[in-house]
Length: 245
Image 1 (tube, rainbow, N blue to C red):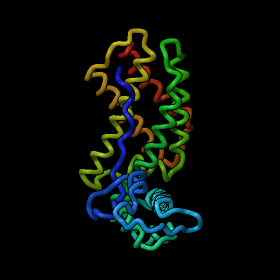
Image 2 (tube, one colour; image 1 turned 90 degrees about the vertical axis):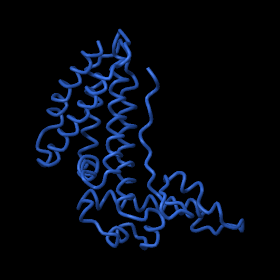
Image 3 (spheres, rainbow, N blue to C red; image 1 turned 180 degrees about the vertical axis):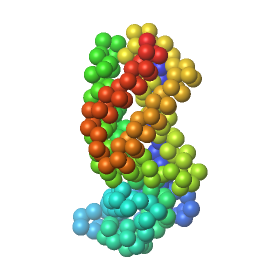
Image 4 (cartoon, rainbow, N blue to C red; image 1 turned 135 degrees about the vertical axis):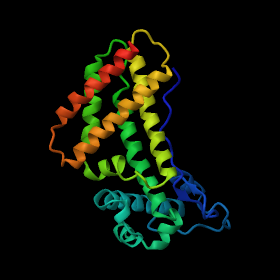
């Protein structure tokens, strides 16, 4: 099977020279000031201009996690966000330009951290691995991560209905997680058969079901023990594994 694809990287921040096209945090930091004169850079508190911009981007993302996660995207204002980030709105408009672009960056940040945790937890997968134990540990990590109400709200709810672009961004992550499930199931199988289109849809349905379980858990005030969720989700994973066996 082909290597696991990386998670979708969002184009969230703006470049200095393009007020409409967004850019990633890494690229934006690396190219900051590239068209400016080659005069010595000013340093602030020992940080270069690029480092300072990256710090400001992270301050805005952290503020977005707090406000989008506590109050929701539609109830967050630029003024409130900048107050939370302890930055003026000039920095917000330079780095993101709109609340939607910041939401995209915040969602990517949360989902990338989740993906890395899940990816690391399934690395021991092989035909000799105890599949139930492997997926139980993975699901325990997933639901513990979602116990942070801010993270769960951002990952599960806040992108719904924002725009077509955000819907596509959300679905790109669903596909990445589905492919990770397929990759892991294949490694656990002794037959090593290439996944079919049917398998992909099954995996996407599995990921969607876990998302719906998490959303209900969040909206019900986390009143169900984690192990109950894990046991329920394991039944779904076993169905996927039987398809691969």
